[in-house]
Amino acid sequence: MKIGFIGCGNMAKAMIAGILKNGLCAPADITVSAKTDATLEKAKAQYGVCTQQKNAAVAQVADILVLAVKPQYYEKIIREIRGCVDSSKLIITIAPGKTLSWLAEQFSGPIPIVRTMPNTPAMVGEGITAASPNEYVTPELLDTALQVLRSFGKAEVIPENLMDAVVAVSGSSPAYVFLFIEAMADAAVADGMPRSQAYTFAAQSVLGSAKMVLETGKHPGELKDMVCSPAGTTIAAVRVLEEKGLRGCVMDAMKACSDKAKSV
Image 1 (cartoon, rainbow, N blue to C red):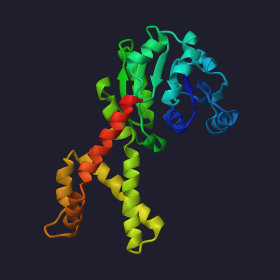
Image 2 (cartoon, helix red, strand yellow; image 1 turned 45 degrees about the vertical axis):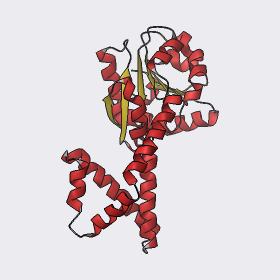
Image 3 (cartoon, rainbow, N blue to C red; image 1 turned 90 degrees about the vertical axis):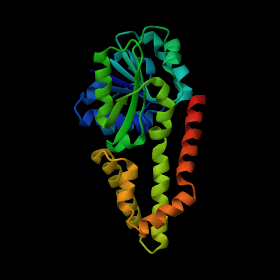
Image 4 (cartoon, rainbow, N blue to C red; image 1 turned 120 degrees about the vertical axis):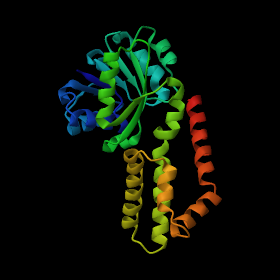
């Protein structure tokens, strides 16, 4: 299996690292292109992958081609590579707003495409990726795509009409969580805790709490109730969060994110 990456930013590097760590293919079977020679040199030094300056050259050699560039560059990139792409290749996209119908129109052929939305925790092997295949993706090709996507975290197949919701709930949400961790650490620092230690306590608490949701199968509300003793410290904090409208604020933020994804 030969995999090509057009673009080699943080997400592409996270994917490459996961693919190599899980032995899906050898470094020599991965080819990347990027805007600058410096980026290509770093990728070759870090991962031992092959590099190409021309995007079409990557498309020619790849069985699976990942378009790891920003949405605004998709039309230009596809124009460059579509002469090298046919139904024998699988295209994986990671751009919000670029629908399967739009992609099919750009490629103008029966090309197997899996539209995905990963997130930055992929950089530590804990990503979550949504995947929506078009009608040309066979079950075997979808299994191959999911194998790639699961090399750097979890992956779920979803109907495409939920992709904008995925952008809000997982694609962009690490930023919300980082804000929450930073705010908790700031409060701990205000109470006298050294900053590096405050970040450790806050981040580990978020990590452990998320793991409890995933591994116990309990409703988040039930887990919250388990921490809130009658007349205790936790319920006092929860009351303030409710007064300040934490839930409504988060929901409004995610709605703004989803609306923006629709307009990209």
